[in-house]
Image (tube, rainbow, N blue to C red):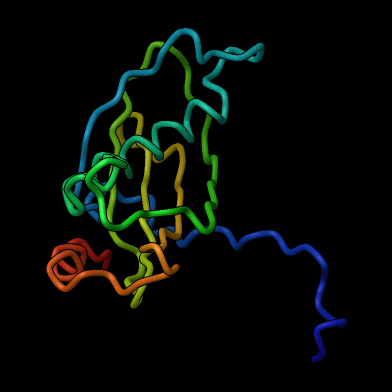
Amino acid sequence: MSQHDQPLVAAPQRPHPGRSAKALYPVTGLALARYGDVDANGHLNNLALESLHENARAEFNERVFPDVYQPAVRTIRLVSASNVVHFLAEVHWPATIETGLGIGRLGRTSYVASTALFVGDTCVSLCDTVLVMLDDDGPTPIPAEAREKLGTYLLG
């Protein structure tokens, strides 16, 4: 099949059903839904849910890569190369949301942070973000100590 036979835009595949299990995620946390994130339909809007995924990733990244978010002292940066979010169920305010995180894939210069949001036992959203390690010259290998830490959080 040539490049021209492929569709110009392809939708991401639905996530594996096993991704909706809380027990899959080695890192967990809690977040509170904010009233200000309620939309005209009476549920938390998609950007509010995405911000919960983002915050779970940032807290995790800070633990694995100390100072990665401190421009004055960091020697490496993490940038998002892609971000795919699946919204699986509506979330209504008030709600306590449990977050789950694991590493979906570990490459040489990048990794996939796979997160999930739960209300009670229901998985309401899944997200996979490809994060790339950069130095001043572009993509750079993930440092050995960080790679070892990341490996302990692999899903599956």
